[in-house]
Image (cartoon, rainbow, N blue to C red):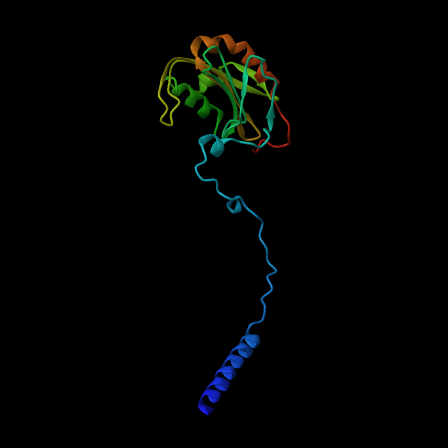
Length: 205
């Protein structure tokens, strides 16, 4: 019996020493540094569709007055303003801001229709129209449209649009669709381009 009591007291003593040690070395740590919350802290939505991944909900820094016949589409990545038009519903008009140079963007559009690059002389003589307080290059093309990025080529398409440089950024307004529908909307496009303006002090988006 005495041995049992002795073992009990030895066990209690050991437990007391353990907790006493924890109290001596268990000082609380105070965290004073913080960091700003980032998008990585947001919860991730599983099985999000393409619209949920690429829709742009930020207000566009570029605004304009579009024709009543154009259907407003949600803004997307690289499309600050986005519209569709035409009887077939295949026509598209969208406004973007990108980097690079005006001539590079013009030639990229022409290449999408199988056209040759403009040289500097041809580029300088290209028609110009007002857009957001500067002069932009007016571009037209038609034929088989290959938008790239794995998209299937579309025969019988047309292009009309404007490329301009503003504060080191490239502002583009691109209209593509069936050739006859684009031809019918060129005047509306010119009026829309003339109405565009920046609502803020920066072209960043």
